[in-house]
Image (cartoon, rainbow, N blue to C red; front, side, top):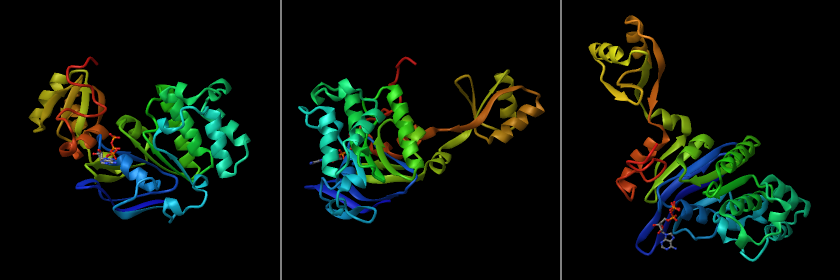
Length: 309
Ligand SMILES: Nc1ncnc2c1ncn2[C@@H]1O[C@H](COP(=O)(O)OP(=O)(O)OP(=O)(O)O)[C@@H](O)[C@H]1O
């Protein structure tokens, strides 16, 4: 269990993290989302004992990170995959970690296999690793001591689509076996797929947190419907007093799906698609962090205006 209570971090007059509180539970993957400079890395650095807090506490299993003996056996941390000594090989980094944690060297091979780093790659110096390979090594290092808690800052960064899918499976399995995972990401869709719980942060303050399903339920706006004869359906819905706007191949209606279905049934119009028009995580994220975004334009996840589909 991770508990962060009233955590504040100031750099001079600037407040990077402002009275942040949240919990991460065993068996759950918690996504930590926020625009650039929101305070995610700072919060995680405080949790891992790398940055002192100005106020508040962050504990893992009831203890501050610095008070945990042999912390790598309890908490796996990946904050900056590029921070490893560039002159060491991947195998050397893991071997050193295993030695420090009192683990058998066989664990190094197990970890290399788990993150799909080949024997040849493991013997290469880290300066010659791609970002994705560094991330894989960082994940291997975080998992080396078989910890019960994982704190990962942007672990999907640099991974290719197959790598992201692999990591998703790995973290889901880990949580299913009772592990606690906190991961930050700017890849909203990725978090939407992987996280059970979500914490949204903007300018150092938590703007929303909770179970993903309940957070997303709050973003549903009306109904999306497609019919074989969409224009007749639009007229029928308007005649029934509903507001209708064209949306892609279909219509977006200010009504519940059952009301839209009833109108279509009365008029014997065949429906092709009928579902709640959820705004999704991206809409939620942009709405909640609107006054903390750097730009008017969506900062993450959405194509720029005019971009080709
Ligand atoms: N050592 C420091 N001294 C001064 N300001 C700092 C320091 N470290 C971080 N900050 C500031 O604190 C704020 C939060 O930074 P942080 O790296 O935690 O954000 P983040 O949410 O991880 O962003 P990103 O998604 O861009 O990595 C930023 O404005 C950053 O410039």
